[in-house]
Image 1: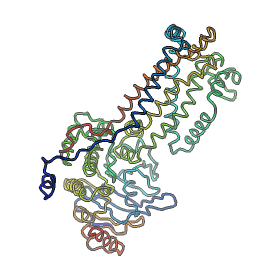
Image 2: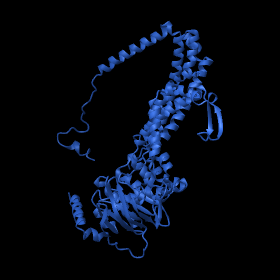
Image 3: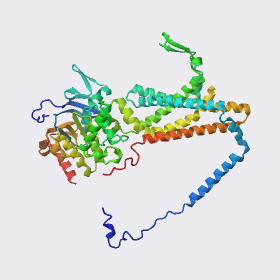
Image 4: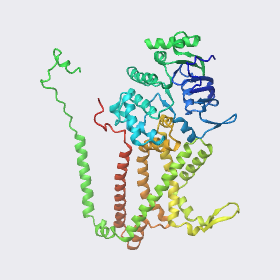
Length: 268
Length: 300
């Protein structure tokens, strides 16, 4: 595996995924994945379904735990405590502190239906970070404006469209002021005409310098916004590098096949 | 808007021309049924007023009799405490059954299996006669070690504690299944989203999962509560003076069986009615976010 080009001026990666293995039942989902994400870059994970993209993403905030290998955020092992050469698994309570610094956006939004939009956004900053209601609310209104939904603070998720719900979910994750944002196929559950409003918010976020790891099928988005593209197949990264290069002049035949297929689907 | 275009199409009626009227067909069956129900209610009312067997004067005399009122108080006290034990045990057992720890899982399974599988009557009598098995109840190190605290079982287990334990543990087994069903109805994505925001496990349960599960938990729990209100009468076998037992002691002396059973029925009806109203308000609380439209200006 060749290391992708490191953007100038940043030597230590924000996220380092080092030889991660994950088994689910008899099925080996991840077979030694290595990947880095540098501060302020957008890494897009692409590949056929079943390649292990989502599993890898879910390992980064320890919603799933790798069987072997390690993921570091800012040099700190995720889900584990390092003692010498040993890594000791943290309790859920301790892991929750690490997760607070990592925002995650899900395919199915997963907004809390029993809370209003505002409550969805301010709950974690208040409960986890101990912020005052006033401070959390003020920032929530700012974030709602940023995702273009300033008038929806009092609405309940059930009454919003999929695109609006996903933008709220992004605002909710941002309210925790994360170091890193993870996106798990954020537009896959949306009607085609609603994907742009979500992708536009993500573009704005990338432009503002947020470090993002995005699992997506949107090749055009990855080419335009991604700094790095990594193509996964059968639990390994088969090709990684500058997004424009990988997605326009792929080296691996499997990447070529995947890109040709998704291009064809896009045109249909 | 397309509606501005359509009426101008040739051959279409304009906005001022008469539109077709739509009339519901007559509901003959409904009127017939109404007549039958009215006739039935009239007959019941006639019987209640004219049949001397009801002995309303005696009902009136005993309705607020101190013995009956004490029975009502005991029934309420027992029901509330039993349900409190049932819910607490139920939450604990449900969480144990849903945990990934095999030992907790096994224990929870065993608890539900045993307390659901044996008649509550047997459990009541067992607790009441605990002294036969363990004459002394003590706290200390088992298998002959030193004891910190010791009490005679006949002193510790009264009718009331026997009823509380027997009914409470049995109810806990049923509540565990109701609560588990409620928790299972919540999508795993809710837990994941909550974890991803940094909520601790207890916060995820209390703030995200449980309030949503309550929507599915409250109606069957209300059912259990109302059932328990009447089921406490089984505690009369361990000589506890709840409502039914109090009424029995009176009519076994005076032979005024019918009016005293009516007294009991009226009290049970009254308590159930109060509970139903309470349940309505609790259900409404947990429907937050699911009502059709709460805030008017949703469309921009």
